[in-house]
Image (cartoon, rainbow, N blue to C red; front, side):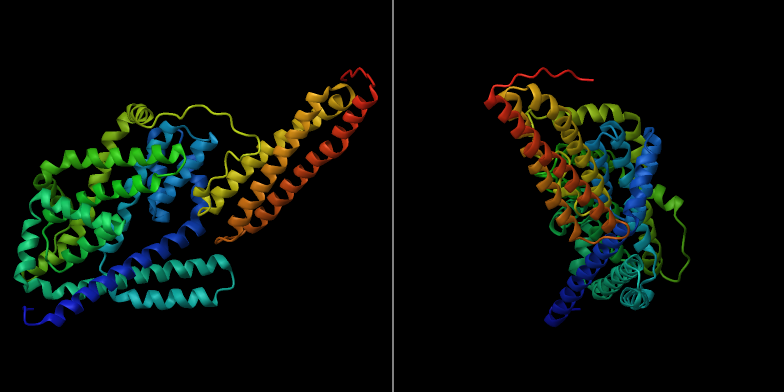
Length: 464
């Protein structure tokens, strides 16, 4: 490739850009399908395996490895903490484990199975359009997404092939041996594409062409870890306090790990080479292209495992630090008609959103029970203020009823699997029933109490 071939630049940019787009799209479709199919089951795993910090790490790693999304795991953690099922200190173990789970992505894409990409795309598409069960169709979407991921990598790899002999690019890659420059490049790219998985994919593509060394790949991965911190904090803006705290844990974990490892990249690279398999091929370039992708994936896993083993001993200290950095807001009274648990954050996870609706229905039920208990004594012997309070309580029940139905309506528009549609129907019925009970109190007992006051009747009410 020379400067006299400008068209080669255009073809290369098109190949890299199109390949990256397919890679990201395939990753997104695969993740979306996995979280729909496995989200409910993984939610149960998290709820059961968080009795101590070590089991919490295991649960976080397992769930993230299955659903291929640390952000989804974080949303689950936020829902558990906000519902009081899990303490914030317990949630830290899950978040640390999620960082280990994300390394499975690098391990998957380090396998050279791109030649089967089109087969996976075709098979996934056929399953998606022919399957009768909705859940089976999502398995097809997952397979097609995985195929698109590998096909995107193949396009990027082919587009990068001419760079092997392009001296300016080779010189740039040599600069990446400087840990600072390599990390800076990883930060910039990850911030631009908002995906550390994309950075990992690009790094492994470059490695398969023998364009980068293991040391440069580690520096780029460390930069991706810093870049994903920016993504985490941006995504936490406007979210509940629990989500901000989870993002803060993620940032501290990554930044401290990067700072510790950065000066020791050469020694760490030697360790990775020791634990990674060797490949015996004819030329040094072929050996580099064969070994380095797997070494980079192993380095990613070792880094996160080692960081987790260090942090797991200080979860209490980390929890206290984050509580200090993200202080509790001033206590304000919440209007009874305003939902407490219904957060837009959970709508992408139907299983979690339904759990939040269940909690809100429990809160609404408590308001209705209180109204029913107060209805007879208020009608018989209550004063005007007591009756007005009873009426306002029903207004709050009506408002909460509207909020719950609106939330269920939004949830019904998403991707659902059985028995989630049935749950939405059941919860709608429960909300309507509770609202009707509140209306009976307002339309029956409250007017009767006001009529008694108009007549001047005095009746002593005795419970029992």
